[in-house]
Structures are given as C-alpha cells and as structure tokens.
Image 1: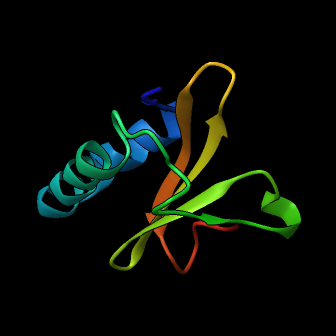
Image 2: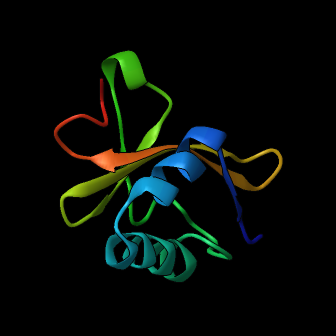
Length: 88
C-alpha cells in the first residue's frame, strides 16, 4: 500500500511565499520521503495536545504538519512553516 500526498490550500500558499531554494528543498523532501511511501510514520512524530492526531515532519528549521488517512491511503499536508510559528 503506497500513500499519496495531498496539500491543503494553506500549505500551497506557504510554499509559494517561501524563497525558492527552501521551497525546492521541501518539495524534494516530500517526494523522497512521503510520496509513494509504505509507512509514513517512520519519518515523522505523532503530535499531542491541540494537534493530537497529526504528525510532524522536520526539514531543517521548517516543519510539515500532516494527517495520515489510512482508510484512503493519503497523507494530507495541513501546514508548512518555520518551527517558531507553525504550531500556533
């Protein structure tokens, strides 16, 4: 079972606002580690508290917040941002 990645509109808008090298790094990381993977939990960390049920992926100082939908084999990327404000 391989997972597919879907981006929220907020995640797409954030990527458009990022500087090109960082956006390219994020896209590359997602393509290498999440798109088509068989176990998306291997590279992430489960979140708690207000973000319970979501997963965090680290790319340098940036974070990806995502929901893993096992029933439809999808990783829904909710938010992408700098670690200082992505959890707000």
